[in-house]
Length: 239
Image (tube, rainbow, N blue to C red; front, side, top):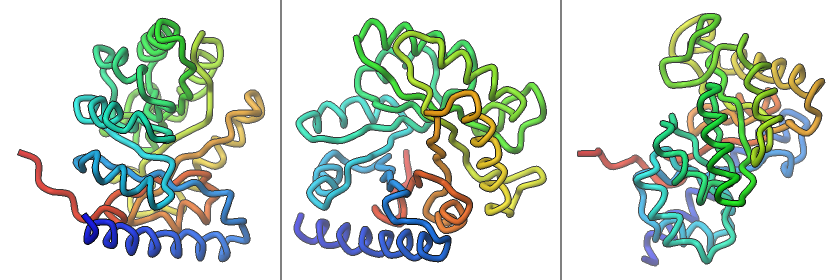
């Protein structure tokens, strides 16, 4: 376990240096960017080690993995972020442990999350997931609403009992006009964020950037970066 702790500490330090350097280059303060460590496929023991090393935000993308892990770490002061495509039949479980759901991309999901949050007597933070590769009125290949659907979803979340509209999330697209242009994609997201905040001033969170492109996200103005591989290592193959 000591070896694993040392490995995680070394990796975290390297990621911290990358974020700090990116902030300096962008003229931003380091505290403007929150690191979320994506712990999917890794055990609760790693989450505990990360907590010892100062991590306070962790993310998962599959409820069947996240629920038992969150339960095993319920004694820790952690904020759990759900970042995967969420089916309505998993909403009740996710609402029992997640502090923020970053993948809200359809009205049906808003209703289900609201009902579950009220029953659990919890407030869930919600991010609208935006798919920059989606045509108007459609959803992206990896989830997310097309940009023309942001306002409708944001209004629904803002009005829904038990939910709190925190901002926007995106994944750099693999297709479409922003493919291979992460900086441009993230800058477009910041434009959407600015428009959103005109009507919802508190919804100022922008979750963008991962291990490979966190610098571009920081440069564009992202408030949160989601880093997995760079901290935990190459993920084991599933199945």
